[in-house]
Length: 242
Length: 290
Image (cartoon, each protein chain N blue to C red):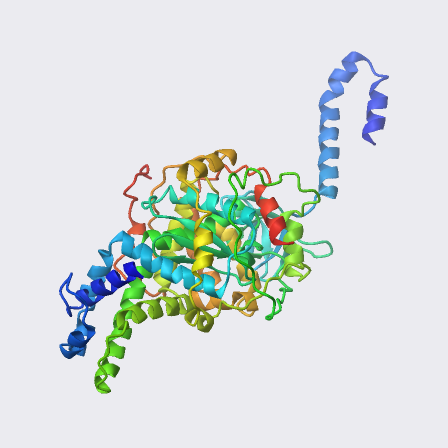
């Protein structure tokens, strides 16, 4: 039964009948909407498992387990909640749909990395910045690629924006001569704190008072050159106790 | 170079060769030099490094940043450069060193990487920015680099390397009986610095910067898991990708970094971030893909 026929049928029933059937109609409408969304829903990302991963019915380890995915299982991602992803296998691939932990995944379209020409010309020095550069930056760019599409073209090597991969090997860095002009021009883009504050406000960024976390480096990591990292202690500039 | 000369004095003073303020005379220095003493006074040098004046730290960092930009130039787009400076500067306001002359540069290369030099220069590559999904991920990367600067990771590592290099160079000079008034210490510092960017910090410093970076991003109102998400993307590229060559050589394995950050993310679980960027990151990425 389509939504249109539902409404048409509803026009011929009494008010009491309409009241009695309202919950049913609401259920059908919601179900139809959900069904439509499921059909139309497009993945926002893709990835694959890096190890056996449990699929939960809720984005929390306390949720019920819906099944287990093997390593290297491809998954479409439809929603993200911090370190949890709502996923389901791509069309034609069997497996449970639900929530998996981001840390069990490798993300992106990984798979066909772009190969940039080593002989691509290098960039040119920066022009001097203009006042209010960012605020005057066009916000009406038409035909914007979504991040999804952008990454897709990048991974597939479809972008024509390759710049080159020269200049960043250890040997090249060790032999580099200083480019003082480039540094001086780059430094002109530095912004004062007040401008950064305005930028943050425009982006809805609300500061939080948080102490540094206390977590040891993983086993096998070489120790820091200095003593124990002060980052493993509370921040001296403030933060609420946890 | 003036600031660097002072650093050289501090370095040589720290290893017991000349008194602070004494004019550098490499001839006298070398005649009185005990190479074993140079090596044995590492602890003194480390202590001196911690006390390096901020202006000298900034001078050293600018020397190194100029060399990195001599290898990979800035991207010629004012909009991109201004945007990254605003994100980065906002993050620095939530650290213990907000008063450094922070500036941020997008380098025109497809390589995937980011650098910090002492004193507040941060360089991120266009290649890395093109892999990001949103501003939270950019904030994660910049906060990681900012953390290195806040904790002076590079200063400590450079001075330690310079000490060893200086000892070796001086030994060579003594063996050949060549006593020259050359910028031996200067070369040692800059040489140690640039080699550091090719080989990387200690892994412990990288993990520490990951953890602190997540906290700094969260303090600034960003979703602290942005860095984790980006790392899962880098994990899909793998070490065989040419763009990952330098990052792979200078950082712990990406998968290890992700796993190490999982408990940190749990501790920051209540901070979801409040970013509503209105499409500004998408506009920047559009430029990067032109």
